[in-house]
Image (cartoon, rainbow, N blue to C red; front, side, top):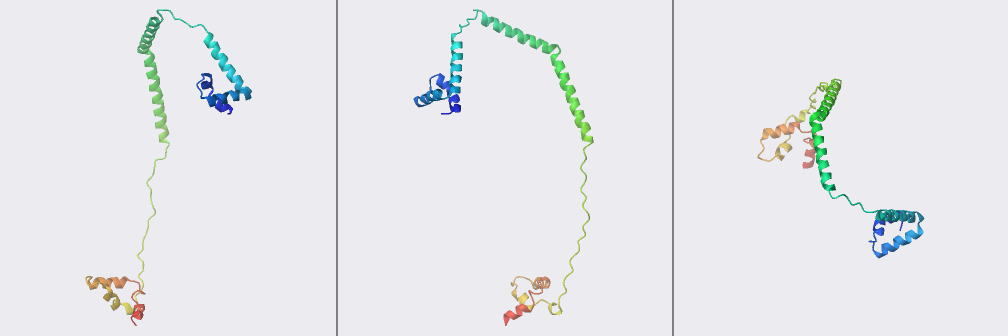
Length: 177
């Protein structure tokens, strides 16, 4: 057992409510550790001192006098609050609040207001279309024939016109051979 465990369990040791194994461990530690033995002796002497003091017996009317004194103190506090203490407190709170609001208002004048974000103008140009070779002026028959039957021919022509040149080029013709 170390000193920390001894101090944590010391009150239970003094009250003699520890289980047997822990009680023996505490006694062994007391025999080995001089510092914890001094602590135990001081606590036990203090308890003996308080137990040997004579008991105090209040007078028979002590409870009634105490209750009367408490009521008088409460009444005096309420009267004092009505006579001006609460007004002084309210005035202090009002002045402090006004000073804080004034400071906040003054400091907000020096804060930069957010400005509108202005982006530089952007000019977009349409890409220059690549020149279509003279052989590709009309859609390739391979492209038109590959489209499903429900699709109108003119849509296929536009699709073929805007398709990459190598897609509808002679490469497809080479696959037929």
